[in-house]
Image 1: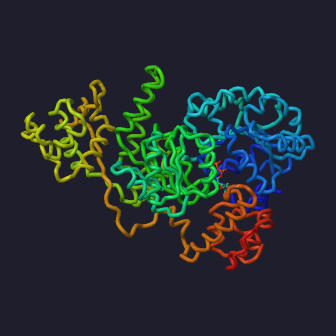
Image 2: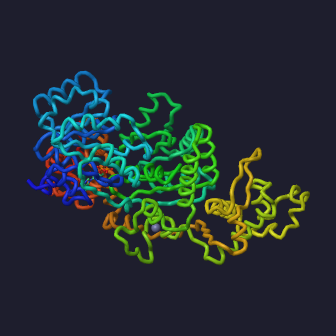
Image 3: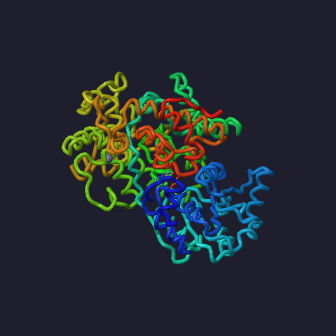
Length: 615
Ligand code: ADP
Ligand code: ZN
């Protein structure tokens, strides 16, 4: 069978995603390769398909033990003889894994690095091992954000099987991390397969934070009954936001390090199994969340870096369907990150500079009135759209800027506004906090201003018309662009003009300012939404909901998360095309022969209007 035929028969997909075929070909030819694809890019298929080809055993090293069992379950649904070996495994299933191995039945074996390095499975791999895949390969690099010392020792094990091809996979790939992976995993003249980092199905929004809970609720309300993650900075924030959302009847639970293991496990379980819509979590948690139909990720606070943002927001829409990523920005978050970093570790001057740059970069991402897809691509050194060219007048059609929800001030207006704010800061000589500077600009500084004579300043009340949220946001934008700074020498943070800011007042330098605008009622659908939602009626949507119920029941019965039964995209296509026979069902993207056999009857019943739930 050709790879295409295996893809269709086992997974029910009609075509490869970018670079999947190249990776699979390398594996078949026994060549090493490095695969860099964004989340949702379809990395697992790159090693699962070779396992399905019947040429031998494929080993997958992964640090995410929490996800292994679900991945095994999903691989089995595609008809693969898959197993996992990790420290959480009970005795009986463990015996089963060894039995399968010793009888040469296993096609796909997931292991944690520790289990592999323990060495007791080497004997079983022998000549059968054709491919060793290392997932989350960035863990081998100190430059990455999830360094794992055990990953450094993986070559000890890999070198025992010189004939097996090696495949390193990751979603994170700055050049330094890439180099590290190649060297540390001992890849031999590898094919380098680097995909474009853009996630076209994600709609990015970044807004100044005003009323945190209200803004979170706006996103939540856009997605009734759908899965979402809200990230907040501290445990306290998590608890507060979760409580507020509950008051508003949102089905949600908090998740942070202060909860006990059982509470955390339950929250995660309920979320993955779709008994819970929203999880509110701290970012300190690398939540082993593999729910593929997360429809939105809200950052209630600013993340630490663009890399973190890419990773955390990337948990939305892994199934390729439209999803939303919203970031609520405040410059004060950046100050908090800095303060926390300083408190926690003794930062070298070099680390300090790296951290400052990371914070500047994420700040710039959040406040620049520039296409977010383009900004993210640029951060990772790639053109946008992929391959160069332009997006045309409506831009990406999938970010607040291109959707017209955030507008840049024109150049002259931005400069004038910036100069008003900067001269206020200048006149106040860096001796006041942001709040007071805002009050002066709005002309409402009261007795204190009168006592200091600040109500006599030319800048007093000069931005009265603009209103407080706008002025506060502009100040944040000027901080991110280095025209203002927050100083920490005094007891509390003070706002001060920088040298660049003084230069800007004399018309040297450029400045950009933007503001959210009231969204128009009748919003054009984004490009991504239009592509997927085309021809989807209200009735189809109701049918989709019924199919979801069937899937939930099937999942409960099998004891696996719903996405293991099949993806949302598969149900969407079913609802739109309404297949009436098992053959027609086989043509639905993501079904494949085994799934049709196992679940077909239940889906067909629901499609024909009967509700035939499994016992
Ligand atoms: P990653 O590990 O890169 O984040 P996954 O391996 O989880 O991505 O795949 C993301 C989604 O894409 C899954 O729902 C998977 O079933 C789907 N997928 C993988 N390959 C294809 C393909 N060739 N066509 C359509 N969907 C695919
Ligand atoms: Zn855009």
